[in-house]
Length: 83
Image (tube, rainbow, N blue to C red; front, side):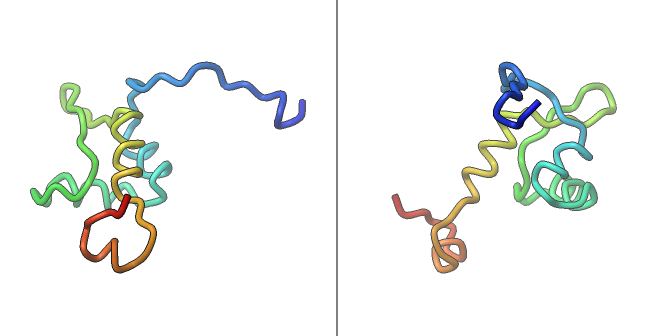
């Protein structure tokens, strides 16, 4: 099967990711996500608590990536995006 024949099916925005899966998607260590959660400064993506388990919604991770996408370093430093 060639890559263009691959069809993963519909993407569920509510799919829940473990911290390890979310970290892999964001290309950070799971410990980084843990620090963001416990830091109280709102640096990381919002998470879901299911009993004692931590999970991240796909849509939240995509939104986090989009919200931290900049066109240049000055824009990133200021935290303000130009449209």
